[in-house]
Image 1 (tube, rainbow, N blue to C red):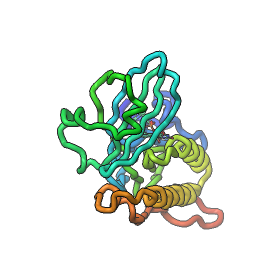
Image 2 (image 1 turned 180 degrees about the vertical axis):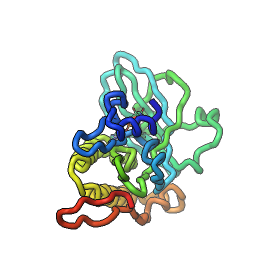
Image 3 (image 1 turned 180 degrees about the horizontal axis):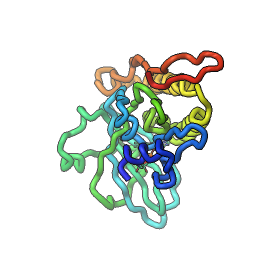
Image 4 (image 1 turned 90 degrees about the vertical axis):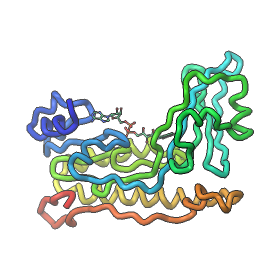
Length: 251
Ligand SMILES: Cc1cc2nc3c(=O)[nH]c(=O)nc-3n(C[C@H](O)[C@H](O)[C@H](O)COP(=O)(O)OP(=O)(O)OC[C@H]3O[C@@H](n4cnc5c(N)ncnc54)[C@H](O)[C@@H]3O)c2cc1C
């Protein structure tokens, strides 16, 4: 079912036919949008996704040998153009990824094959073979300019997506999902939910600044220089709740 149709079905109370991620709250018929970084439904309702940076990940999957298959190490290594990591992937594979800004990446995918991991990541990948061509994926820090509207709330990566360096994406998506569920079932809670999302994103941006500032070896690198500033942040909250009255969301 197309996302907007799913949302409309939810509005009409026929949520049984909506995808699992579009179940409605029985009490208020609010649809929760957990569609990941595409934020399809929130954007269809007029919300805008504000990108804080242009981070992308180029990802390789590598097959292991039996001897090296049990290596559970995750390793992160900085380079002037960004950072690399490698982590185990089931069953005995390993992922290697290069994180950089979209404008710093060679534009043609054929040239990604020539990217070489830095020494420590290379050593962790030694003896493995690539099982598929590299693929690029959006990894930017981003958030919606409004997190809810009449009949919908966005959650997870759809409402705010974080820098993978933080390893906070999944736990935050779970926490925001719970907060969105609570907001959807209580009249007037969308304002508090928007405030909570803003707080979570602000905390992430402060942590991001602190972590990236630790790397001081590349003072002239655009990638690292861009992350030594604290970006501004505005998320619309609608009206503050007044006692005994429900709150219009997303205005
Ligand atoms: C390179 C990289 C590395 C990462 N590493 C980590 C890590 O180490 N630790 C960590 O915690 N996080 C990490 N993250 C972040 C983590 O993957 C996300 O934060 C998390 O998956 C968000 O969960 P979500 O359910 O909000 O979105 P998603 O996992 O993106 O799920 C959204 C789902 O909705 C579906 N969907 C989309 N549109 C619709 C629609 N219209 N109708 C129905 N379904 C739809 C999609 O197919 C998808 O299955 C990483 C991210 C990247 C890019």
